Length: 282
Image (cartoon, rainbow, N blue to C red; front, side, top):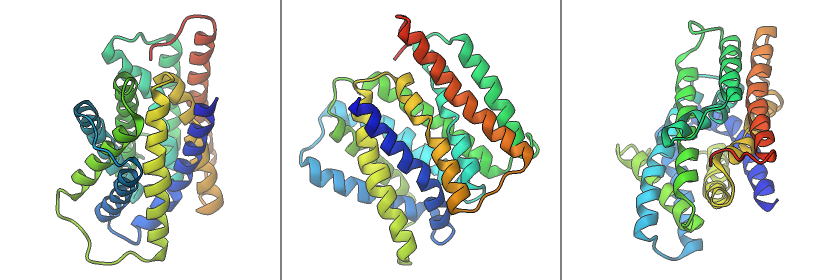
């Protein structure tokens, strides 16, 4: 139960950060924002852990961290071009994509995964106005959803038997390294609003968030994790409407509802399958 409650809290913070990050990257360059965010997360975890990671933790964390960095790079650049509500909903498709990518490791794909995929695609068409209506930001966030799904699958396969905190620290370190690789540190000091976003995302969404996810995934399946994280689009949608003033037309509202229904319905079917003594693949 503790894993579920902590993951729900993390997911609520992640949903809220769509609005925070959208506001921050309109005032400050994207790459320096990500560099400072993940550098802060790395420092916090290093101070708390105070030990070097093992070779296995370094190897796994570096690979998984590179995927995570690519996901945040596409998501954050996408947020500069699309609304926080759209970004949250499209990112949430990682829940449906997770079992599809899990197939690469030999896990079966059930009928409800195919059904949820079709429903979510229909919702995405309505939400964005179809392939011709999707802007570059929507496409970048869709790529982010694929990368986040891959991140969950890889953690689910490799994190058991490792220590969660050092593994999370290595992931934060890899993100910091990759975001700093271009030498794009900004000489402009962030303002108070940007610093607020950096602290919230660096501490709670990154350092503590990925420590909790890594720790929880050592104990629960990737599909179960995806169900808990499926609430993220709903949190992002609430934050976009209440804090950013985003409004949806009828077609967009129907599309958003279809995406949410596909995400939650898919994971509900997976849990029902598990409850009948036929566990879904990890």
